[in-house]
Image (cartoon, rainbow, N blue to C red; front, top):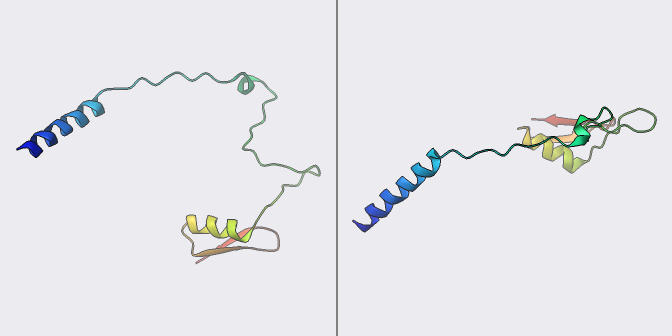
Length: 85
């Protein structure tokens, strides 16, 4: 009987916490986003000569391919990651 009472109280508590809305705080955009000279840090990094830098290591490529569902992966001579089943 005691276990059933605790289970009912726990279920009521979970229902109450799930039903109560939580206000989301308003997030203000930093002033850097509003400027015209803003550079997105996630854009690809370019070298001084304008070509994009490619970084491919065996461990990095293998882990990326595994996370994408491939069996293995390796870097080719152009430093591109090639995934294989």
